[in-house]
Each structure stands twice: as C-alpha cells, then as structure tokens.
Length: 113
Length: 112
Image 1: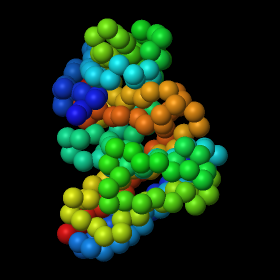
Image 2 (image 1 turned 180 degrees about the horizontal axis):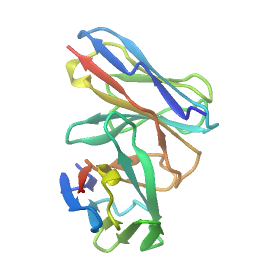
Image 3 (image 1 turned 90 degrees about the horizontal axis):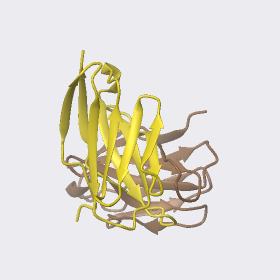
C-alpha cells in the first residue's frame, strides 16, 4: 500500500519548456488535489478534483492544467514553465465529502531557470 | 489576503514541556480545522482536526482548542518530544467546498 506517489521527485526546466507531474493513489479515494509550497506562503491549492471526471480551480490555477485520468491518477501540466513556478508541488487525496483528512505525496521539487 | 495565519514562524521548547502553536483565521464561513505535521523532504501528514461545533478535541499528547468568537485555534503538545520537531500547518475549510486553506506554518524545535 504505497499511499500517494508522485513522479518525478526533482526536475529542472528551462523557461518555456513544458512538463507533466504525475500523481497516483491506491487508497480508492474519490478526491485529489494539487498544491504548491513556497517559502513563507504555506501550501496553496492549484487545482482539485472532487471526483473522477471533475476538476476545479483552486487559489492559484494560472499557468497550470490538470487531468483526472481515472480514479487513481491526477496529473498537473505546465505548458510553458516560468521561473515563478519554481516550487515544491504536492499531490494529495481524500475521501469524498467534507471533513476528511488529506493524504499527501512526498512532493516534486521543480526549478525553472 | 491571508485567510489563515500562523504568526509565529518558529518555536523552541524543552523536551517534556508544553508546546503551543497558534493559528488565526478571518473567514467566518470556515467550519472545520485541521493540523498537519511536515518533516523535511516529506509530504504533510494529518495530525488532528476539530469541527466548529466543538471547542476542544484530544488525541493522545495532542489537543486542539477552538475559540470561534476570537477566530483562533491552538495546538497543544504535552509532553513535547524531540520527534515532534517539524513544521506544523493549520488548515481550514468550509463544508462542501473541497478547498482547504493552509497557514504558512510554524517550525517547532524540541530541545533534548
């Protein structure tokens, strides 16, 4: 039971390059989330998927797209990376509905030069 | 506009003493609050939560207190242990929104 897994762990991009961050969970959770963590900013929600087939914007969606591929997988795409997207990205999942704790992956550290 | 604030970036406490971490919020629509612990190079892990219909929730050494009128919550760790050294985030949400707003975190260091 791996929980929430994220790939890659580290990535360096040049400005303008694109990439997709992968996330998968094996807990049969309906809801999945993407956050970014920046120094002094806490975790900020980028996009979330309340259930398979739905996605919605969070606090900071600009510059990102997401795909809920199936119940297990939720990917985050940067179409044209910018230095402002240098951050640590966390994927999380939870049972559907309110008042449920989130389970986080180990994170992807992304640097955009 | 920071809806959830943790005004103390860091806190040092002696082993065996009480650690008190504070969190303030501005949105009166929040009705559920959570605390997460994060070690370096790992994702946050859930610690404890509280619903707005309660003012206290305990789980072993961890107790969360909620003061709705002051829009303030606190996490008490008693007794503190060196393994508690981590960054602690509080988070808040409103029923049905799926949006969890996190504070900026407090780095706790428990000194042996």
